[in-house]
Amino acid sequence: MRVLVWHVHGSWLTAFVHGGEEYLLPVVPGRGPEGRGRAQTWDWPSRAREVTPEELAQEPIDVVLLQRPDELELLERWTGLRAGTDVPAVYVEHNTPRGPAVETRHPLADREDIPLVHVTAFNALAWDNGGAPVRVIEHGVLDPGARYTGELDRIGAVVNEPVRRHRVAGTDILLTLSRRLPMSVFGIGVDPLARENPGLHGHLHNLDQDAMHTALARHRAYLHPYRWTSLGLSLIEAMTLGMPVLALATTAAPEAVPAEAGVVSSDPDVLAEAAQRWLSDPDEARERGAAARRHALNRYGLDRFVTEWHQQLEEVVR
Image (cartoon, rainbow, N blue to C red; front, side, top):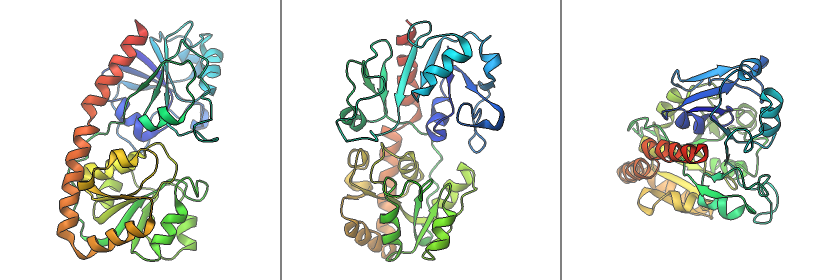
């Protein structure tokens, strides 16, 4: 199938384009939000190819994968096709509701012609999906390999845009714990945060995914401070690296991290105590990390992910 899909969430799309379809990725001058094209820091197969809006109008499209409400209008403006009417479409929801929890109506809640796929059961529960047909397809990740060494007596975290997404990303929790624990933070836009908080270390924001994984896996454990996010792929990726994890008990994290793989708590003090224990006991940390890797590969493996998505796309095309 030829699948039209915008580059919105690079980590998620990295797994998606490793399926067996042909992927059309809009690209616009300047690679802005309307068309970022292929990723610059992930390794994508050649069947994920860039198309300009002008080229897209001449391309046969079997199905459209929507991720933002604005893409409905972009599709019609660029091709003259209406999603769900002229061309089959699926909408994947990556995020938790931005408005009041459980009372926010999804933008596609009134559409019965476009299936709404959530990336976690928590998302499906929190959104008011209305009459839209709903399915859950959990994340999938490429296996980066067991890279964990834990050689650094530090805790690692990955947070993109921690200043703008302050409470959502749990930046305040990250800063509080960094005053008690040696900590490194990776991600886009972390420089201002690191400059104002000398306790943070290793703020490398320009690494590609492969290099970041290697650097992150040198840390004793991974901290996931997110307060209100669907389920950060960085958490799953850390587990596949073989890292023990510390996560706030919010959204889908309690279901994603089994007890043997780490510590999940809504109390930051509990996370700090576990981190301090692992800093003193690298053997326990390694044992927890090995369990985390086994779980992540079993639940979030790439084969299951691309199979479920192929079935979903085939179903809507039929």
